[in-house]
Image 1: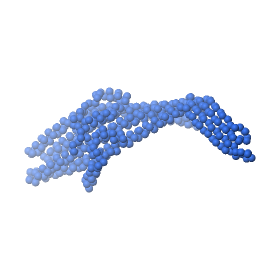
Image 2: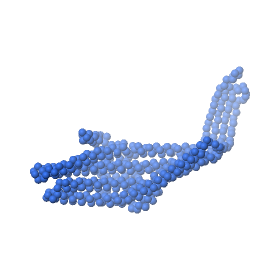
Image 3: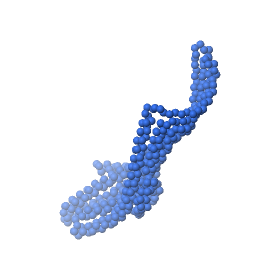
Image 4: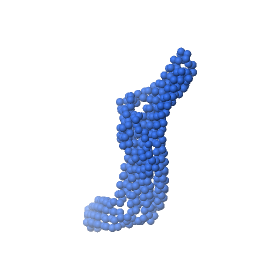
Amino acid sequence: MYRKTLIASALALFLSPALYAADLLEVYQDAVKQDAELAVERARLETSRAQSTQATSFLLPQVTASGTFTKTDIEDAPKKMDNTNFSVEAQQVLINGEAWYGRTAAKAAFNAAEAGYSDAEQNLLLRVAEAYFKVLRAEDNLRSSQAEEQAIKRQLDQAQEQYDVGLISITNVLEARAAYDGARAARIGTEAALMISYEDLEQITGERYESIDALNKELPIAAPVPNDRQAWVDQALTSSLILQAARAGLTASEESLKSKRSGHLPTVGLFAKYSKDSDVNNPITKAEGYDQTIFGLKASLEIYGGGRTSAAIREGSAMLDEAKSNEELAKRQVLQQTRSLFTQVSTDVLVVQARKLAIKSAESALEATRTGYEVGTRNIVDVLNAERALWGARRDYDAARYDYVVNQLRLKRVAGSLAEKDLQELNQWLVTAAK
């Protein structure tokens, strides 16, 4: 039942007319348009932009207009009294530390949001690459599992034939069948893993793909450029977007605390007001209205606000402590990740070379083992183990190449230098996979 369900799901996935083949760059372009995480960061950036504009507005001229019209009945008066009032008032802040530092804090917060959005763009590049090569890894695993299953099936058939003519014991057949059953189970698992990897890619892009291009076997495997760990560390401390966002957040918290402390300081502003009032048929004042223009300075100082300002200062101090800790944490993480990833990429180069040699060794070992089996010096278990070793070596080699590619992108991301051109260059080393 499980096998039938799996086959049906695979057919639904790979035969759907909505599916199409794509390369790495096409997948990334789909993700840019559809990725939900990037959309969230874009909305946060626009929110911060609007907040910065709002904070600036408190330092700009404020102009308001108002007007009223009333009609009043007075007992024993021959006519109703009409009153129309219109006024325009303009104010300009001259001294307001809370607004001034609030504006600076909002600008720093916007800088942090910009760095966060840029980092989200780089993170999308990395997530797409990770998901893409996860699919390729799953496809390689499936091909290896299928080939291993077929090879072991041939061994099982051969063992069965030899047993039927009395050349070997039933034990050899049972051992070959056990190996075949294990290989078949592994192949079923890799089929499911491949389907899941395509679904992970779809989650990022909102698109479903029939297939994706494979990584060329000729991809050069070279050490990071520059091949100097300290150079990468220095670049990360300067260019890391994660660190830039943390530093901008620290600046925003410092300016926000200054703004809150300014609540204890006086504010001074210039104001001008023009008002026009007209009374018609006022039996009391007999007046017909008036025009009035007022200019002046207005100063205010909070004497007691219920402890609001003091509490706000304590809040700002705590937020500043949090921002300092976040900045220090980000710095430590960037340093650790940069050093680790540089070491990992350098190691990946050596691992790929070693895995390539391991394939040749496994091929030679399998050939020798088969020869020994034919002349009776080796048994079926030895052959099966040699088969597994060869396919395992091939899987390990493919995995090492993918690890090298992805870790290089991770290193560039933590150093703040990952860009679309990196995917473009990598895309040139992709080839259409054979069907």
